[in-house]
Length: 218
Image (cartoon, rainbow, N blue to C red; front, side, top):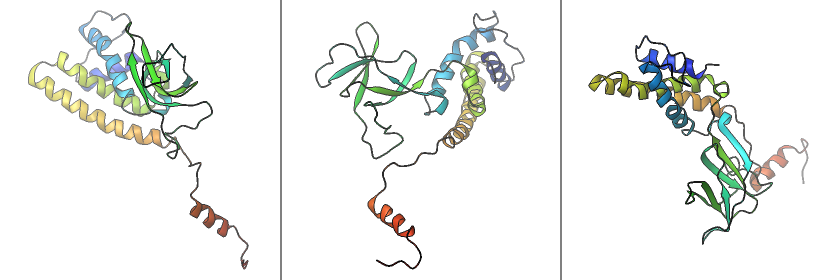
């Protein structure tokens, strides 16, 4: 899989920049390395937030905090690696994102006076399903990597290519990113084969009828 440095070099190549970056942490000293170190985390996190990527989705039992404000029963610490909270669930409860018949529990994500993330909800011993800030590029799918190179290129275009030409190049790269994101989403969705746990009564009755021996009559 591509490393952060390789992703940055491909992004520079999209812009026609012949420079190569050797290190991001710390930046090697070139203008390209400085810009890549600045914009790479933004490009990565923005792309991670665009979809519920399978490789970036996690479930964890939340750590309960003190008293919740009026209107909520429980307060939980937001996982430190969370980008987006998708759902909160009770212990042993199925994911409402996978089983549409299950109602979603309301929650809000806020911050405390000291800046710590907090989740308020009415679920006791809650588990959260959320998007992780994935830093390990080995976990990215190939199409996600390609989309990321174009996303990064769109952010690098302005600093590296001044004026209207830079704006036009940023727009072109953003369009390319959207095209590859669409492909990556489709590929990601194909990795999930969800089945409803609830069968409407008319479907169950029809299935039972199809299982009856030929010639059988009630």
